Length: 116
Image (cartoon, rainbow, N blue to C red; front, side, top):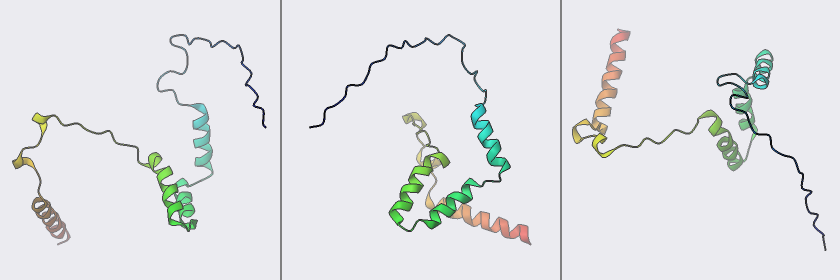
């Protein structure tokens, strides 16, 4: 039978933070700045390193796991926008698929005119 050891309680008191103490808003973190500077000087390309690492992974599920872990750092979550009932689009302001096809055709023709 394994006997559990109780954790030792320490009697440290937490110091209260004084108003106005600490780093001021907008002041950069010095450690982060040093790391960024070192990476810039070494010509380290994080994006290329990530691509190379993903290309080396053979298992598709492992590749997806890596992508999902990195994804929040590349594409931050967008905040959901709530629409009030009076702000909802009326039928005449909604864009249909046909409208998108017309816009795409106009854009394509506009590109051809510039080439001529």
